[in-house]
Image (cartoon, rainbow, N blue to C red; front, side, top):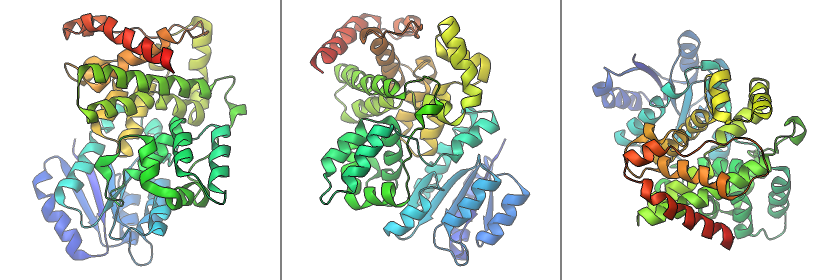
Length: 400
């Protein structure tokens, strides 16, 4: 089935350029073009689109306001904004309504690549209602104590950027949200992100202030609604899994980018659980209750009761937000590494790191956790490496 893409821009020459650029994709994409936001909204009301690409600066209604209306009409649609200028006000206005941000001039390779990565995600979530909930998210909620600390630091006379960066790195929701923003090509360093700490340093105090204090991009988790579920423990597990994944990756590769992809994917591997817990409580409560009664593993109950797992939901969100394909694949396959290619992949590394963290951290929980897929590990000739990985992760745990 052809994916449907809508381009909205008030410059006919630019629209004609898009049309020519995408002519070669006509067998896989059906593209429509609108000369302004009003014309774009008329099309959105008439037919569904998988992806909408809008210019930021348009007369009457700009790109941010246009995508805000699109979100109401077609909440599951992926929204990309293109801007020819990078003033802070433009970024802050668009950050809540666009999944990705591209800067002009924008060549065909960048645009086609962004669209392709988004359309390739659609098969992950077949349930349009769940896809709509995930696509509506402009940020992820954060732990209350960390939120208070970071806002207090930002409101101080002389905010400490390094301290803020360390606080961000302690919370998965905060890390993912900030990294979504720094991924923007508005800033010109899309490929240089190596960690949440680096993301904060690159953005700087004024941008972080604008995002958190200005548009209130980050929101506290309402702990009273979580029925005893500990998000703090979830993020502690995720952060440790990220470090385990980086430890394993370092044993198998000297590629810094591979190691960082494993770390980021490991740190965010359970971000889908946060979405389920905070955004889909009614749907997810029966899953939690079943795990408490029968012991787990939780992913089996997710699949049987929801038809979708936290791995798929998390991967879909990170893909929408423009995270690297390797990170998205790592999150998607952290319970099923066989779906993500042969050999040492981020998915395999994160899969092992996740299980080892549960094993080595000596959780008090009586729940049953997922086990390592030894059949897959053996098929890849990596079963003999498991004890080496376990020893290295145990040493890392002892040193922290």
